[in-house]
Length: 177
Image (cartoon, rainbow, N blue to C red):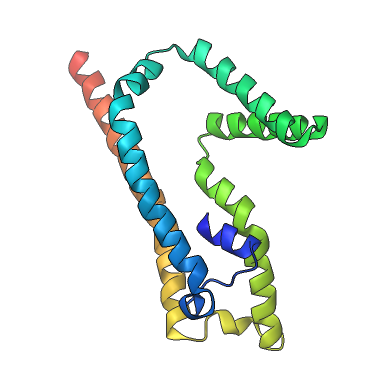
């Protein structure tokens, strides 16, 4: 999220961020430091209230959250189109949740996809259209390996867990017979 905000503000993240934009970096660090103390001071007395909010049934709480969201979106832009976009994304989020698709990667892809695509295009252009630049250096190979392991390992573990669950069900079924 921070990367998306920095890119939106035309600030290039990276090792030179501290030398090129020290005011932004130290301002952000100071703001986060102050925000942590403010949250601590405000949240400790309100823990009881937060737990009571969790006791509200979701059939009551969700329409209230939806109405506050509608009022907020319309209050900011005054546009009915923005309300339709919000409803569309809400339906999409509901459908993805029903299909057991994790929402965080979808949100990050939506926010960072354009910047990542522009940087990919820039890297390929710098190397005169050579796609091999993505796997030439040891660092890029290591990053690709980490990405592949991070993608494949959960799939393998998920299959093993499902197989173990089926074995347990079969054993329980055989015992009860």
